[in-house]
Image (spheres, rainbow, N blue to C red):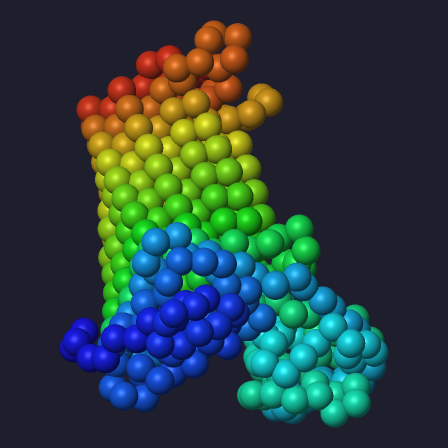
Length: 398
């Protein structure tokens, strides 16, 4: 990144003074319009009524303790169908919305990438005017709704940017869920060469850090904790991610979830702890990745899971090396590593896969499970003693 202008945003005694997302965005836009540089955020808590929208060639850096807190959510049903390409929606109750607020529009069929996340540019009686078109039809008959739900930090089509040393508070108790295809404490879409470091993404009603269709993303020295869905969520064709020295813990579902087509990534020196279902989940065309020197412990069912995929869609050619995978499982179900589906060409090498709890508390029943349709799973120099049931169960025929 070329060094450009530096500007400071703060609650007082700064280049731009403000207490919410408007001041932060004004600073970021100013720096971007001058060709790039750094926005320093002075210590304090800033209320986010909309995403902080990243811009190319701009670094965002907290100095001291900087908290970006998601505003309380509000929702209202649509009273007219929101048509594909339309740039407004009519709602039953506009009282909780205002110009400049982030908004998500969806219905029971428009989910995932079909959810539209926009900024309200104005309000005309019951119509919310948007800064861009709806991505799909949102129909009244399908319970269409508008919600003040958005990523706290968002980057669409940006490159060569940084986010460093901030705390993102998702305020999940007072917000509706927004899934990781369009949301998260931090959310990137079709971005490239972005570095996220020393960020704590917590308490978001969705994912902690999600990046989709984004290449060469670096996430390091971050904490994702207490988020409703996933902690770290690279997905949808993201190439060459580097995820290292992070902690993803106490999230509702999965600590590190590789969605679809995550390839040639490096995931190392992370701590993946106490997530509701799975520590690390690998699946649909997630190939040629390296998982090394991670601690994956005390997750609900699986330490590392290769999901049930057919052979063309399997998570092939992944290396699991030098990890500590222990004390995973609850009830009668628990696996250190589970290789499901028609997954092939997996190397599981030099790992410690065990349960260190007292004998009556051991829940990691099987250290390594290899499913019937898996092929060419290589095991070498793993420590697998101490599991409650079998150290290794290989049901494969290939």
